[in-house]
Every structure is written in structure tokens, then in C-alpha cells.
Amino acid sequence: MESTLRRTWAEIKLDSIAYNYKKIREKIGPDVKFLGVVKADAYGHGSIQVSKLLQDLGADYLAVSSADEALELRVNGIDMPILILGHTPKEQVGRLIEYHITQAITCKAKADEYSEEAVRCGGKLKVHIKVDTGMSRLGYLCDDGYFDTGVEGIVEACNMPGLDAEGIFTHFAEADEFGDENDAYTKHQFELFTSVISSVEEKLGRKFAIRHCANTGAVARFENTYLDMVRPGLLLYGYGEFARQMGLKPAMTMKTTVSTIKIYPEGTAISYGGVYVTDKTTRIGVLPYGYADGFLRSLSNKCSLYTKEGPAKLRGKICMDMCMIDITDMPSVDVGSEVEIFGEKNSIDELASIAGTIPYELTCAVSKRVPRVYYRDGQIIEKELMLRM
Ligand SMILES: *Cc1c(COP(=O)(O)O)cnc(C)c1O
Image (cartoon, rainbow, N blue to C red; front, side):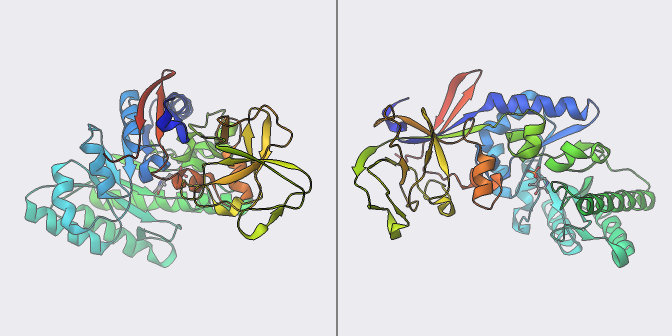
């Protein structure tokens, strides 16, 4: 690794993502399409590199959260179908049509706007209709008293000029939680979704080409929800309980190096606020990794990081650019030694659990300052640095 990268860096193993993709493919079978969720810069892994890989592997669709995320992929050579899951301002409709980007339609107001704008541009916007079956976020509300009005609204959108309704989808709120009530909730969402589809298709006199709802939890646990396409994110990157159960591989390893070593006497307060005080002569390693790199400050004094001699306890508050570990009993850990923040040895799931959060938040938090090093077929294929020169 060159000097510019010797501080702190994230190794992204595209081979692991390819492995996970193939495993998920095996599980869903040949008749179900695969949409890879690459929003939020592919959960911090780099959406361009991950999308290129998925395109090469023959994935069917990608999903992002905004027009900018979609356009970034288009201008970087990704020509497979892309679905925008979230809000796009109507002013962008012309560009979506020009770049063949599919947009989610989430309510009547948006359907009206997008239709009008598409007609004005003289084109057709490909759309997937979003149904709110219980996530209570975006989508046509269809539960309980809203079934008929929901179905009517969706039929209306499908018939609007300028819109081409290729697909319909919903999102599960509890598919990744274990418990009978959670399972019943998911079952209800799925049954509602399929009834909405039947009603809409009957009224339209035609079928949707792509019906989809299975996120990570549902891909892992509910085969009956696969329909025409699955939509996993976290599973593809190899984190979480389901990934472990399926033997998938975590794609990102966050590494840093020991920058400085200090020896302190007993009774020394370490870092801001003095929340940790040494109880004996203590050898402390200062690491150039802090919350500005994406570390969660709530992990201060609570977790361990992985050295070549095993886990070393984090001592004191995590700072913006640094943190400290206890390497008193690790004589071979020296200045320049590598330390794994999370990855293959130090499980991100465990760190997330200590921080009271989910692994998604930890990979999404990895900041722009951290260079990404991409591996494919065991070789470094690209280094993405922040330096703007
Ligand atoms: C983020 C997202 C997903 C992927 O969720 P995972 O839990 O990472 O599988 C799927 N569908 C929608 C609508 C999403 O917003």
C-alpha cells in the first residue's frame, strides 16, 4: 500500500459481493429477477464499482434513492435498468426519460406531476407503483378502509398519459425482525399487496411485468414473497444475521494503522472528559480514525478493535480524527501496525449492536475522507481517494 493510503482505508472486496450475489441467486432460483439496492453509494461501498460488478454478473435491476444517484451511474457507464425509490422533483422528469431511468410513483399528486411533465417533454416515463401496505412511509395507502381508493388511484396512475407502469412494489417493515407478531405483520403486508395487485390488474385488463417486495429479511426468510423480483441490500454486502446464516461474506474491511505509541503511568485520564483512567502503567496506541471518518462516537470506551495480537480495548472518547487503544499486553503491535476497525475479524454486527444501531448505519457512515481500495479476483483494481487536485 502506498504512503497516501497508509493512514486509514477501506478495503472493498468485490469478490465477496460477487460471491454473495451468486449465493442469493442460487436461493431465489432462475425465474426470479435480481434487483441490487445500491442507494447511499451502495451502503458506503461505492455505487459505481458495485453497479459495474452487478452489471457484469447479469443482475436485472438496480435501485437508488435519488435522481443524482441514478445519473451518477448512467454517466459512469451503467446501462442496466435503474429504479429511483425515493422522491424526484418534477423538474428532473425530462432527464429521467432521456437517461432511461425508472421512477417510483408514490401517490396521486406525484403521478399527476410526473405525467404532466412527461407529456410536456414529449416522452414516456417508466414507473413502478409503490403500495403502502404497512410501512407507513411512501406509497398508495391501501390498508383497511383505503383499499378501494388505493386501487382506484393506482389504476388511474397506470392509465395516465406519459407514464408507462412497468412494475408495482411494496416494502416490508418487519421482515428482518424475529417474532410471531412480526411474521404476522409481514404476512398481512404481503397478502394485502397481492390483493391490491389482483384488483388493479383486473381493472386494467393487463398484468404488471415486475412485481416485487422482498428485501433482505424476506429474501432470507419468506420464499413465497419473491414474486417476479427480489430487492436485497444488506444481504448483498454480507452483513447481519441473515448473511451469517447463509454463509455470506462481509464486503468491507476498515483498516487503520497505529500512528503513535505512548506509555502512561497509572491514574492517567485518556482523551476528552477523562472517562477512562489507567489502572496501571499502560501502553496506548493512537489511531488516525475518528468520527469524521465514520466511527460512531457512542462506541467510545465500549468496544475493541482487532490487532495482530487480537482484540485491543478502545480507551476513552473517540475524537474527530483519532481514537486510542490499549496495547499494554501486545508487544508486537508497533507504530505502523495495521488495526482492523471492522471487517472479517472484528464483526461489524457486533460493533453495531454495542452502539445500539444496525450495520447499515456503520457502513453508510464511512466518510468521504476514507480512501476505498477495490479488490477483484484478488487484485487491487482501483483506489478511490478523496484528494481533489
Ligand atoms: C433500502 C431498501 C431496500 C433494501 O433493504 P435491505 O434491508 O438492505 O435489504 C429494499 N427496498 C426499499 C424500498 C428500500 O428502501
